[in-house]
Image 1: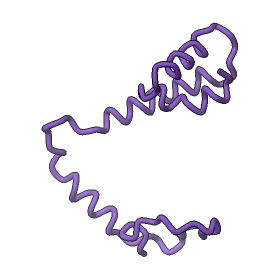
Image 2: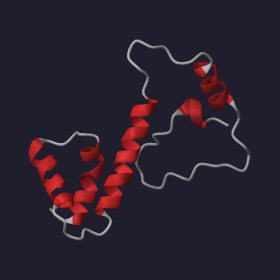
Image 3: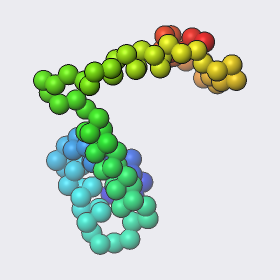
Image 4: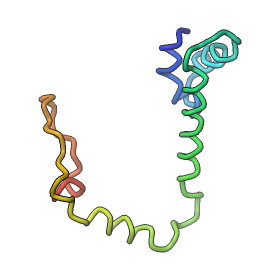
Length: 104
């Protein structure tokens, strides 16, 4: 496995989403003791992100804290400042904007 291949798969590796052969290849890559520029840092960052994601997920059977939905509702209903604009879609692909979040 090359460093580029590892970095491409590191997020899924940190989340435990790879199949056994890919997982083993990633583990062997960073565990080999060889110098892999940026691979260990990419893994540390991916693991940090995985921890943040896990910490943000609600515990099964437990409701969010009081006021969470009210706060979200207030934030998305606030008008966008006049000096903020979305970049133009020049890709030719359909616009994927979320209408209720994109209105001024």
